[in-house]
Length: 159
Ligand code: THU
Image 1 (cartoon, rainbow, N blue to C red):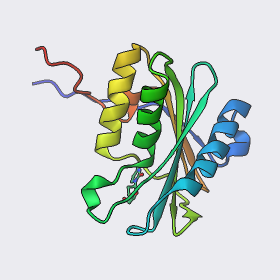
Image 2 (image 1 turned 180 degrees about the horizontal axis):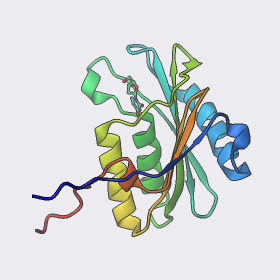
Image 3 (image 1 turned 180 degrees about the vertical axis):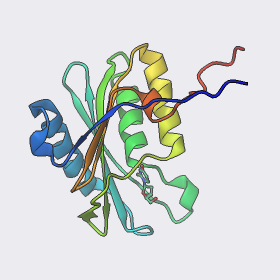
């Protein structure tokens, strides 16, 4: 038996002001995207902004349904919209922001397991990593590959 450790590198910022201009712009776009949240059940709003490699920004927001499982998370609405409308343009960076009753959470909202698996699929499709920025009002985390949010990714049906 061997004990092994999985190491996750990420950057932490106390505000978007500390970030490079491109990231700051994407954080602002995620905040803007949140306005499209339809969240009458959870009252939890999530916005996502996905920058593609050519600079296009695709926005998404959580969409709920009275039959709960029929709803969809913000980051998946953005990724699926990008996948459907720009199938050949790789993802560069995905920013996600969560709010409780329209007040941005102090600590960044963390994507659910299904969204991480969808990120993994697009990363696999494009053959190179993309960045993920999780935004809170007091803390922002920046990851450099999906693997850092989903270690030991399931990405192959082969042994
Ligand atoms: N939600 C997202 O949109 N993204 C996440 O990363 C976590 C959760 C949504 C789903 C649901 O509409 C609400 O937040 C509460 O779970």
